Amino acid sequence: MTNADHNLIVRVEGLHKHYRMGTEDLHVLRGVDLSVAQGEWLGVLGSSGSGKSTLLHLIGGLDKPDEGSVYFQNDNVYAIGGSRRDYFRNQHVGFVFQFYHLLPELNVVDNVRIASMIGHGGGGRERARELLTRLGLGKRLRHRPNQLSGGERQRVAIARALVNEPDVLLADEPTGNLDKATGGHILDLFAELHAEGQTIVMVTHDPSISERADRMLTLESGKLAY
Ligand SMILES: Nc1ncnc2c1ncn2[C@@H]1O[C@H](COP(=O)(O)OP(=O)(O)OP(=O)(O)O)[C@@H](O)[C@H]1O
Ligand SMILES: [Mg+2]
Image 1 (cartoon, rainbow, N blue to C red):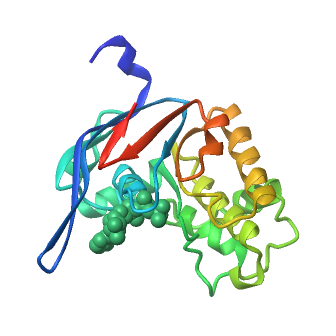
Image 2 (cartoon, rainbow, N blue to C red):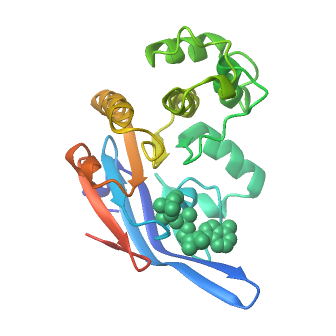
């Protein structure tokens, strides 16, 4: 390891991912290498179907690569066994999913709290409220997801991703389902978090994000173009 590597928080090496459906073999990632520095906001651009969500899930320890490694600081994520990997992910990674993945039967506070309950024992209600208030949802705490607008749901998803103070925030197309103004507010929020030192990896098909991120890469034909 060189000195320059000390502030790397994520390192991805030679990542390959196939999806096999019957006789079809879709080779989505074809050797992806990537490093993310502490405090960096990295954007990954790619057209629909290029493998952005696949890549983000692999970085976040949510799936398994066919080849290659993902390191979090010095831990090899896929060398950690299943249940320990869940715990590891819960401690280190905040994930904002492309389609929110909020639990419909829980209100807003409990949707955020649930992430802090795993691995931390109960509690987290105060932090959930604080985050939600900061994200402008102080008057929506008792609402269920289906009683919220898309932009509000996205903010709940962001609060949930932040509740355990993750080392890295992984965001999958966080503005994709929102109008331009609402998407802009969400990006302002990411910029604020970034200014506070939050490391962010965001995948998107929206090139306007390149004005905000520190660095942009493009995912094309299963590889990253620098
Ligand atoms: N679980 C799966 N099983 C089979 N094929 C899959 C699976 N998940 C994704 N794929 C395929 O892999 C390719 C990449 O999917 P992925 O969701 O990573 O793309 P994406 O870049 O995130 O697209 P979008 O911008 O539309 O969200 C697509 O062709 C998709 O159909
Ligand atoms: Mg996607």
